[in-house]
Image (tube, rainbow, N blue to C red):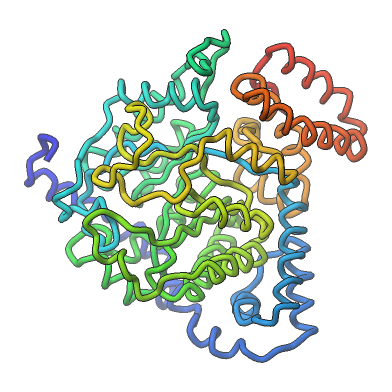
Amino acid sequence: MLGIKVSKIDFWDKQRIKNHQIEKYLQKGDFIFNSNIDSRLKRSKKSDSKKFQDILDKSLSIQTLNLDETAYLLSVSDSKNLEKMKEVAFKVKKKVYDNRIVTFAPLYLGNFCVNDCSYCGFRKSNKYTKRKVLSLAEIEAETKILAGQIGHKRLIVVYGEHPANDIDYMVDTIKTIYKVEAEVKVEGKSKNRVGQIRRVNVNAPPLAIEELKRLKGVGIGTYQVFQETYHRKTYQDVHPQGTIKSDYLWRLYVMHRALEAGVDDIGLGALFGLYDWRYEVMGLVAHNRELEKKFGIGAHTVSFPRLEPATNTPFTESPKYKVSDEDFKKLILVLRLSIPHAGMIITCRESPQIKKESIALGITQTDASSKIGIGSYSDRSDNQEGLRQQFLLSDTRSLEEVIQEFAKAGSITSFCTAGYRCGRTGECIMELLRAGKEGKFCKLNAVLTFREWLDDFASEETKKIAKKVINREIQEIKQTLPGVFPQFMEYYDRVKKGERDIYF
C-alpha cells in the first residue's frame, strides 16, 4: 500500500489516539450523552405562539438557541409558522453576512485510508477504488488550474486518515498551495495577471494537539472535522471496531483540542442520512454550545452533507434514514436560526435546484466547479469517475455558471479572505458576527473581490448580468457607510486598473 509496510501502518494506527487529551473535558459522560436529546425531542410537541415568537426574536438578536428551543423549532409543521421561520432566517443571514455568497473549491489530495466506514467509497475494504496520493508537483498543477483558469481564491483541502497523509504531508501540501502563483488564462489567453489561493481550509481526520499547532503555524483557515453521526450506537455500527474512527470520543473532542491548540476557526458538520436528521441537528447545536461554554467560541461554519451514492458501497443505495428534500431544507432553516452567527455551507452533493432554494434559507457558502477525484482538475475530464472519488456529485456546473445564477437572484459572490489576514478570527470574529458588524467589512471586500474575478475570468455576458448587482452594492455602501465610501471608491478604482488583493 503506497510502499508503506502493513506493520508500519499498524504502528501508526496504535499511537494516534491520546486519551489524556480527551479525559480532562469529560464530566460524568460526554456532552452529547448529557444533552438528553431524545427526551428533549419528545417533549417539544406542544404549540405555544409566545414561545415561538420569543425563540425567533432571540435568533434575530444573534444569540445561540438552547436545545429545548431548537427542539421546538424542529417540531414546527404549520405552514404559516414555517414561512415565518424562513423570513427570520433570511433576516438573520442578511444581518450577519449581508447579501453575499462565498465560493470555494474542494481539493482531494489522497484516498488511502486506514478506516472502513460502511458508507464511504474510500474505505479500506473497497478493492475497486483507484488509490493515489498527490505529489507536491501534482498539487501545484491542480492549484494552477484552480487559481489561474477558474479563479478560486479559497480551497478546502481534504485528506484521508493514513500515514501517507500524515501531519508532515499536510504541512508540506498547504505550504505548496500558498506558494503557487498561477498565470491567469481564460480560454487559453493570458491576462498578464497572477492568480493565487489566499485561504486554505482543511478537512482532515481528528488530530492531536501538537499536530494542530503545526497546522495553525502554517496558516490554515478553518479546520473542519465532521462527527458523521452524533448518535452513539449508529456511530459504532457504521465505524467498525479496531479502526481509529471507531473511537467516538476521539472524534467528538477534536474541536476542543483544536481550540486549545490555538486554531482560530473551526467547522462542524454531520453526514445526514446515517441517523434521524432531527437528532443530528440537535447534536450540532449541542456541540456548538459546548464549545461556546468551554472556549467562548462557537463554530465558524456548519455543514450538512447528505449521504450520496458511492461506487461499490451498498450502504448508500437504500439508507434507512434517507433525508427528503423538504426535510433537508427544514434542517438548514433550523440550523440557521439555532446557530445564527455561523456560516452555513451547502455543497455540490446537492442538485442545482436544491442549492438555489436553500440560498433563501440562509446559506452563506458553497463550492463550485468541483471535482473530487484525486487529480481530477488536471486531467480535463468532465466525467465523474466513481472509482477514484468518495461519492458522486449532483452539481457539476462551472464557477461562472453558479455566479451567473447568484447574480440573477441579486446575490453577490465574494472571494474575500481579508478577515483571516486582518486578524478577524476566533473570539474577534465571533463578537463582530454577533454584533452584525462583520457583514459591513464583508460587503466592502465582497465588491472588491467580485470586481477582481469579473475582470480576470468572466465572459461579457456574466459581466453584464453582474453589473446590476455591483452597482446596487456600491449604492448601499454609499448610503450605509458614508465615512468609508471615499476610501472604498479609491480601492475600487485601483482594482479596475488592475491592482489585486486590496482589502479593508
